[in-house]
Length: 417
Ligand code: SAH
Ligand code: SF4
Image 1 (cartoon, rainbow, N blue to C red):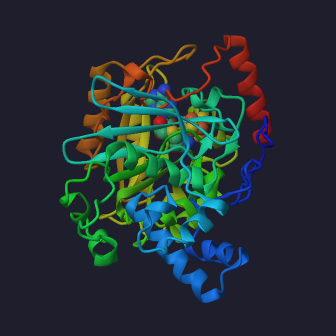
Image 2 (tube, rainbow, N blue to C red):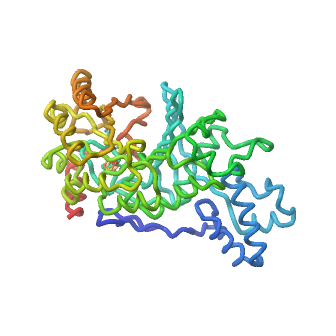
Image 3 (cartoon, rainbow, N blue to C red):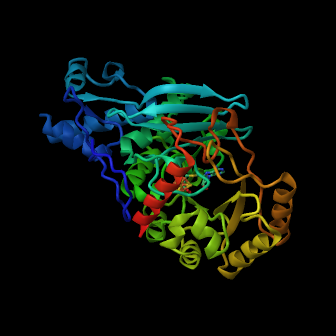
């Protein structure tokens, strides 16, 4: 597998194609659309009609039942099952480590079949359960407050590795429907699109946020293909209203994201002036604040009912003054954005050069934004004790020195151009 070290432009990371033949020659079906599975069955010798039927059945077992063994597919002829097993597998990322926080948050360290590590986090709340999914191993960007940005090696995750996280979470939470239980897919898209429908049957995993490791809009095709499987009524059948994609501001991909994926958008704003945003979110040097806010204002599907979330990390004496809060309000109003603000207390990591703003400062900032009529809740840090909180994700904890971190930041910023 090729692994790049230095970032480039829009989609700079060499990724394996949708099908990565495994060492044993079998093909992993997870992450492939139904049509692609049918083509593979046909290429392996089934006639077109049989291939189509089998692909439909297998797809249902994969995404609806969570089955990983062809032998369990009871509506497929007994003689057919070994034929499938010889040629195909239903994979999952390997689990290297599973951790439980004392607040109930769970973090998994996962490994791709070619040995790259990445992380996924599950955050249970009273009324919902949110899975924080990674889109890349590491990140080519280098936001100054983010631990993931200090990872040197980067590779895009494949659709199978992305949707595989959701399936693994369902495995771990014991959430696949038992035989005989009502068939959500059979009830059609309408039901799962209805906001209440999904948690009504007591599910733990109700929401997905693309906020793990990586910049999802730098791996657009794979993220789109994976989320299509998550949203497919015959697939994992999760409503697009329950999925949020967070970007640091890859402006040229934002409209495409709204059009082709259609999920909720979160934008890592973090600063309201060019000077500060250039420093802490370096992609700002390429796509500035005005362009970014214009892209938000143009985001397909954004409305008062489906607001854009602006994430704002609270960094002491950097971006947390009353003036910053007022400027934030001004910008949101100037661009007439249907927006809410999510204030994130900075989560520290070894070598970070920032401190978190004081609770009083965060409260005051939040009040100013609230008083202007814009919702600005403070996000409670979750899973800090197991380094699962925002911006703490980083695998293979190679402790870099300050000088090494600075050099890496320079390299990545130079590559942004
Ligand atoms: N790459 C995407 C999504 C992943 S990061 C993005 O940047 O939007 C998810 C959120 O956590 C982002 O808003 C990110 O800026 C924020 N974050 C990163 N490091 C953090 C830290 N140390 N403390 C708090 N939030 C952090
Ligand atoms: Fe990458 Fe997001 Fe971290 Fe920035 S905040 S380095 S874009 S993961």
